[in-house]
Length: 378
Image (cartoon, one colour):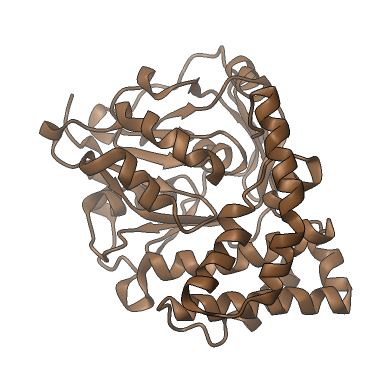
């Protein structure tokens, strides 16, 4: 096997990693590739980047499906057995997007990493409560020590702790990056991913140390060729860690208020008192992040509240949807984590603490139910 065959992407990259990589539209016309149709003529091996997408829900299904459309990627999904998995095998992965159109892509989907082999990049798109169990199973995806560059591993989760969990499980053969995404996407029905925005849908990742390894630019260029905006935050902007904190503040606040009220974003913003609660959560998140060394957040809470006005009014957080359905959620990784980060620095976060306490009983009940049936929800 040719080592690191994806380096071709670097020839078109820009010199500053802080730049967004502008997507080259993959087209918005309706396109269907049946699972039984003949695969497209493969691009020569030197132009292929092998990618494993762990999880085929809203995040993994959308971004993995977009990458699978490009000639420069060979994408394999790793997802547990179930109706969604079976539908993808039978009919292909369908994405319904106002921005990118309605298309069905024939993709490979397996249940475990051992059947995939070594890849160049891994996108980890599972719920955070599953990460500790999933991470050790990903070792078959990593390059061997003699293969040169370690496999790039990009977590696209909502919390802050994923990189550390992955590093502990995978060791030096993995180059674990920081990562996040901005997207509203979910499983509409088995085999179908709905994408409803936002208008700034994007993926961000990078070295937490501020380095610039070749795999970062190569993967960014591949996302661009798939029509997805990708940004690698520069060190002077605080790097990927600062970007992760900004995402974490926003999603934790939105998740907390949405789960507690069982309301959509539009309903939250329509009620003056509930809007004030959301604003208080954002302000507390800023205080916590600042105490953890994140700078440049003076205008963040106001900007995030303003941004919320432009988002689809029917928007809900995945945590809130899980709570409403009685499923285990990312309460601990988002709302609980914010409370613990606050306590660790002696920062007052009464709104987060109150909503965390209010949501804990149902979370515990959902976990007991899931354990009793021996399954986690997607």
